[in-house]
Length: 221
Image (cartoon, rainbow, N blue to C red; front, side):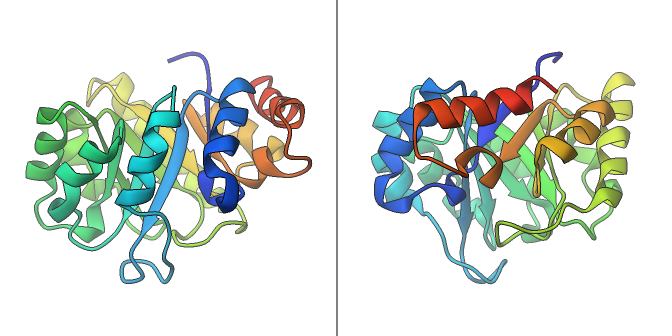
């Protein structure tokens, strides 16, 4: 896990041209495509759901990294995987059957992820690290894009790397929220493997050349 991976967040893309935007950032060097799913209950916002993911899947040539910000996500695991999720990440706060859900995700052929709100202790997810392929550290409050990067959350990245080095699990450490060229180095130095970037990728001209410049700037840190 030496090379940093970039997962552009489709939440920051032009929703009227999602398939085109996906193809552009893929050609520009993106490694994964990050898809935020919100239900208006777990977080105060509504975004892409299963039908949209299913319609986008045929256009995706790199993994779809789906982050469920929904209550009782266990109800929809099979549906999201059927729709095309390569990685499916659940919030520890949103379910009372996290262990069973992570096992189910893997049994259905997808990669299992776990995440937590900034105010939630890492201790709540530590018992599940051997069951996941990905741990997502939120460096903003989940629900909206464009928020300030919460520097105090970097300690979670360091701790997750330490636990991984000690054999707690074999997982990617992903960071989402306020990732820019300035904050990316802090995350990578702490142990991050995957950076979710929204405006840092999609800002500016909607061209492959611009997206490639933005992605390369993050990868070269």
